Image (cartoon, rainbow, N blue to C red; front, side, top):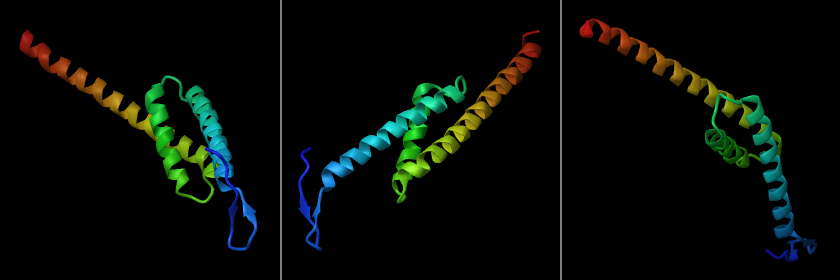
Length: 110
């Protein structure tokens, strides 16, 4: 995308496309740093695909605010923590159901 000089209503030259592209690039760099940090902190709790999915959701939510770069790290951490808690709870329920299923089958087989 080439940058074009645009005239604002005050007659000043504004370079929006290039500025927007640079901001988007910096935001993507920040997002990758957040992914790297959170994947090391929550290693073993969430797989890489789910982690990126949750961080993409946080990115979309942060993009609706006036300061996405400021809010992205906090929103991402909150969403990753919530997803890790949810996954731990699901794992616990699954293991409990296996235990109950095993306990029910033993008397029937005996």
